[in-house]
Image (cartoon, rainbow, N blue to C red; front, side, top):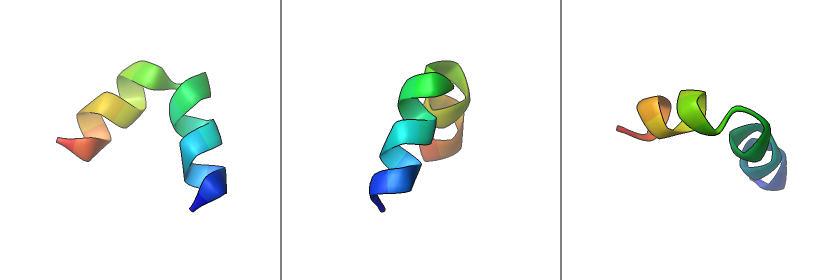
Length: 20
């Protein structure tokens, strides 16, 4: 899931929303 982490960093706001 390393790729996912990278995506999260690039799209912090998106990842935050997705995680929720």
